[in-house]
Amino acid sequence: MPTMKKINICGVNFSNISSIELGSILKEKLQGVPENYFIVTPNVDFIVRANSDTKFRNVLNNSDLSLCDSAIGRVAAILLKNRIKEKITGSDLLKIISSNLERKTNCFVLGATEEIVKIFSYKLEQLYHNVKIAGFNHGYFGEDKDKRIINMINSANPDILIIGMGSPKQELWVDKNKRFLKVKIIMCVGGVLDVMAGKTRRAPVWIQKICLEWLWRLMQDPKRLWKRYLVHDMKFFYLLLQESLRNKS
Image (cartoon, rainbow, N blue to C red):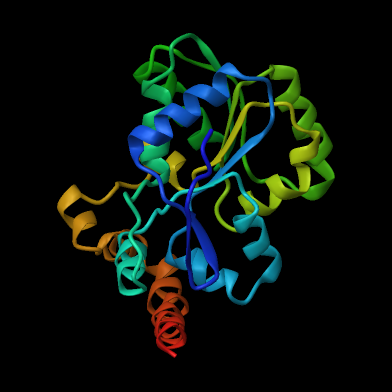
């Protein structure tokens, strides 16, 4: 496999990859032996957090594939004289891998509440005929349950581990436990479980294209998200300005 170009935005690496290229990589990994190929989907919130959390930044930058889940991130890359080929969200990743399976493929789902993970697992299996849910578990467990969860996953013998426990919990959990897992692909998809299960709705395509998906999410859950989007994530523009000035000097 040729070396993939990485684009750095405010300290976080992004894999410069298209959907077609992603499909080819995933196909190759599924045909190989289990190597815990680790995929993350950073957005603006990740970048801001990574700038104050060195461990989280290292986890993202040491992942095997880092997909740009942010229209604003793509625009930022252009301002920094780079170009990210395509925005690929957690939902896109799930669709690309599920729709291109050539045989029945075991998947284990970890995350969300017991009700949501059940609904998600059922819908995913119904939607994609080659997806076989080998097991699932909710994402609300403490560190003392890690060994039990890992044994449950490995016993199910999945090719793909789908994790939706929210960031940074999901990425840090994988970093801590990856060496104990025996799967081919590990993908962190965040809130995708809630979307497919019908708890939340994804923004229409036209809203995604004009970089306002964050506003759509905020309107659906203002009590939980107002501080993230209107306070915490605003720091991104300061970080972007700093990096732009450094590049000019």
